[in-house]
Amino acid sequence: MRTLLVVWAALFVAAHIPYLPPSLGDPDSVNFALAVREFDVTARQPHPPGYPLYVGLARLATAALARAGDPLNAPHGLAIVNVLGAALALVAAFALARVLEYAPRRALAAALVTSTIPLFWFSASRPLSDLLALALAVGAQACLARAWLAGGRWHAATGAL
Image (cartoon, rainbow, N blue to C red; front, side, top):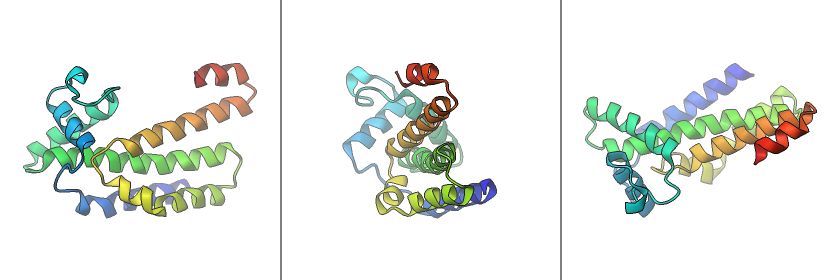
């Protein structure tokens, strides 16, 4: 099941790469692009709370695309991080379903259905941080649920803070 999940996540990424946006098209993505050049939350580069993980990953992606000769490296770099975050969100959804004791096939189905939700599909290629944040949130929920179900309620409760 894990192999199928990884293949599906890779196909999800491959289906989005040709359709990365040619422009930023949103005030938040403009702020993220400015932050890739110079991180300064006081100048709204990006807007608070700053999103340091997303901006750091976007800097790496943007630099790699610039070296590869992509003239649209800012919107593409931001969007690639979000697409990879969406793929990670699918893995996190599978992990959460498994922690909640879903059968492997049902956990895989949960991840596959998640990938076909129109808002999830559309949001994946936007130059925003939404799906990377979703992946981290669902992954944290899976970790907390695992600690809680294993009897580590104190660890789960403190980790939730």
